Length: 381
Image 1 (cartoon, rainbow, N blue to C red):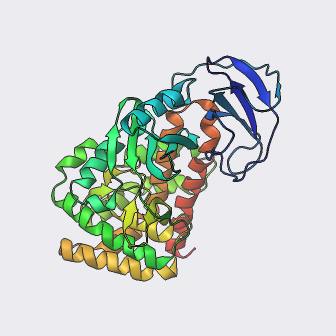
Image 2 (tube, rainbow, N blue to C red):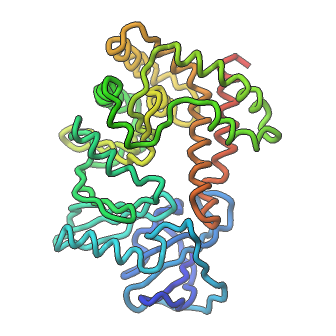
Image 3 (cartoon, rainbow, N blue to C red):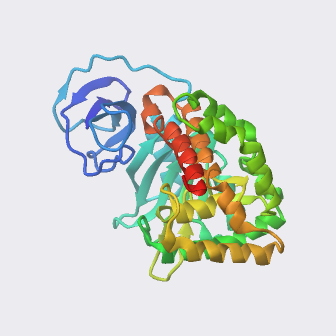
């Protein structure tokens, strides 16, 4: 990767020598040097992550340690740029956070068009809190954390404070993120999450404060239509959507709180066995089958080891809403889930500046193609 470096006053100092990152994921920007705050992606030599050669704009709070070469390109403003990606943005956010939690030092972990994250350590180097800042289309996340904490405080990180420009300060949740965890943990997550969804199915009034994603044809059709010529079978899938959504509604599964990205990597566990569900920016008011499909299928279709988790999920809903047919709803939702993902990625693209489109541009057609593949899989083709 290459850093284009600006000084404390925002003036471009030059371009640093390329160096190798420890991880291939573009949004992970920790440990790039003392006093370095990465602002945003400028260029990438491939159309999508991970890997490749990427160039970032970074700001230093003191002199830069390393050689700098002239950088000839101009840096332009953009109306869709997040505040934390602007010159001076990280410094302002860190000042806000360390005023709330004095005696801490901020270490940048991640920045991209969906969030910027810093870890706040105490004087002994122990994590105390996390500063997270999100763009305007995720501004409901602090509200969602408070809403969930009022019902199930053990399931979410403690929200210490939230502020302007999408800033929030979260208490450190001990443990580790469980990327790659197997069916046993997924079953625990589903079991722990059900009472929360059952609560908001019975009383959805607070859900007015988060995005409404109850099923409707128009949003899916709008995102899919530009790809009809390049994704065979997509037009037929969209044409049949009214009938499919009607059949889903007839299954009787109530709309409720949907996490939106419920996979083990967004769950932390510690030695006590506590589950902490992270990253609530994608939460919506919608069909709960979306969460169980994400939890048990990921992005690859059906998975036999998760059959018991899916069956247990269905049994819980049958007890909560007698007469509903959760398994049929989940099967009917299989093509809708990737359509929903395509819609989310398209929304990201609509709300971010073009230099950051490579993060998501390939995801829209890929998810639309996955929706068609799921239809063919269900029909046995």
